[in-house]
Image 1 (cartoon, rainbow, N blue to C red):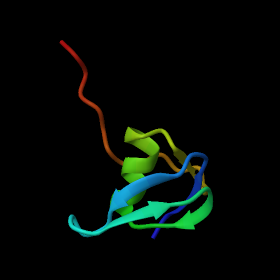
Image 2: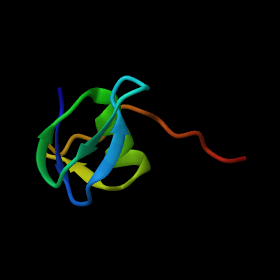
Image 3: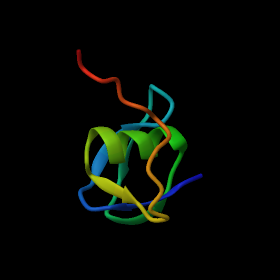
Length: 60
């Protein structure tokens, strides 16, 4: 499970049904939560500094 540094709290649907609040500070979260927080919401950074393995498509 990745360790992220949350700069802005955000809600996250842990199992698709139950929403939890991810608070500021260092949090150990699931891979999916880290991806959402770092890449999509820009509300956190990975503590270990490793960028996600997800590749972006080049626009034609």
